[in-house]
Image 1 (cartoon, rainbow, N blue to C red):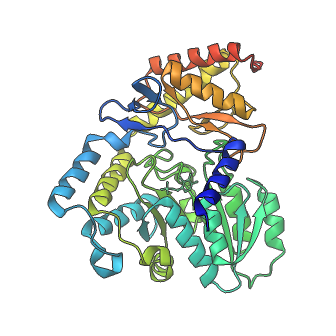
Image 2: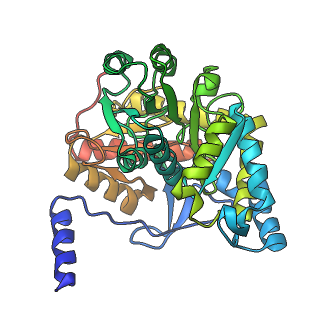
Image 3: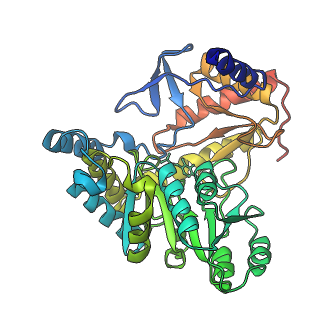
Length: 403
Ligand SMILES: *Cc1c(COP(=O)(O)O)cnc(C)c1O
């Protein structure tokens, strides 16, 4: 069997569709973020405009300090699964910190946010006989894979539409275990779910609620507990899922909920049980980041300022961007070739790195550049970005937004 030819044929097809992914080869440098060294073609130094290290916590001295200190004190790896010698005191402390963040009885840490969604949803869906999972149409791949793996029945409700959710829930009797799964901030459009309305509908049908706050933890709410915290709704959500790899600048994922719920997932989820625990130093660093953002508002305030500033300048130049209440600014191009071309020119000629977002990640005709300004982008960085976009809008004869 000629496997190589088969691999190449599918890769060629991907290239022909324009969906072949090329990674930027970058080197982050403490103290310089969001400027990074570029090892690929283009300038030696570029400014990152699409990082999920939303608040720059990945280079915070206290977070680095915890990772270095615990590595020196405890070594590198956890040395086992959580059950077989791998539970370090740092994991226990991190889980307490996360339970406190969300006002829940308990928390469980996983290898990543992806794994936490996959493991929690597949366990809930498969271990609650007859369960039906009601999934928002735009849920993340990690949730979709978890639901699929559970083999539970799925109902896909119209994105952010509590009325459609209500109609679908109404089709099932009170004896059916129902799980309503959705996100708070959706990362491609930057829109935010109507959490209260969704909880009202779920309550009326006796459904449990499962929210992915991956793009919100650290950034929303007075202590960084996410949009549900900001709206005072954390106690209405059965399970809150988050990541330690985005605004917290580290690595790993988690769920929080009641003691029984966490114990249930801990005891039955294969994706939790049969894998090495995250390094104790990573757990310690993540805990410091979570703790820091519980009391520090500076990063969130400065992020909001820079987000507002970029939106204002885009508006002033008529550069169309999707209006939303979050920190994510999608600049709409509406054409896959132009989208990639503009991203290439930004990188090669202006030292601006933003990954083009094309189909199938977003629907055809809505191709975009997705900017995530953070507290460490300077006013000059924003001015430079807007000037470059303005020039490209002229060069490519792209439509301007009407004020
Ligand atoms: C990134 C992401 C995840 C996965 O989190 P990781 O920690 O990166 O694995 C889960 N859900 C959503 C919505 C995400 O964007």
